Image (cartoon, rainbow, N blue to C red):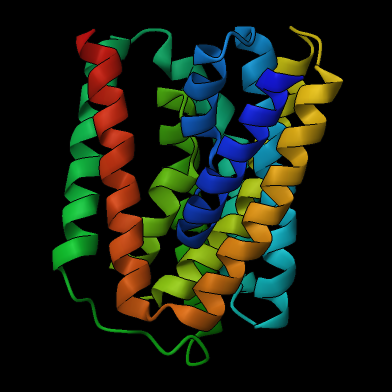
Length: 249
């Protein structure tokens, strides 16, 4: 019970911060849960379910604020879901460590773009057909590489959308909606390999919901576009640092 309460508190903090960036907190929560002595499969299944829970609460506010780019979100979701298994299949014949180092390079490049590059903002209402094309392209890129590397596609989607010129708030909100489904799909796969701890899920689900509400409120009401962009860049750096740590040790 004590471990579950500690995990819930940690979940609240990280979910609040990462909801702002729209990428979900699972990539940080999984190693934290394991460090607390929680079984690997239980940790992975729980963290992925928490991603879905958090993004459902966050997306409710984002929908009300009209921040989700629907004509981009659905093509990304459909194409990424289709190509993710293809990427996973292709990865069997490639050196995984080399691929992960290439992904680290991409994350560092994307982080520098978020922190230093100023893209021209697009008028989302001017070309709906082009939005669909962007959605299909980004979905193919994120889905295939996400499956190839075994990492969340949201790590690709946010920086690419911002690079294409979409507002950071809308890029983050759109990715949050997509993460609901991609994380739940991953949860189903991992849940079959380990039992879910009810006390752990109860405390962490509460922390996840509260963190998502707080993070989405901060993102929509308190933070400016440049601050969101900087937050996304910092999150990408943290992901890159964690991956380097895992590769080196």
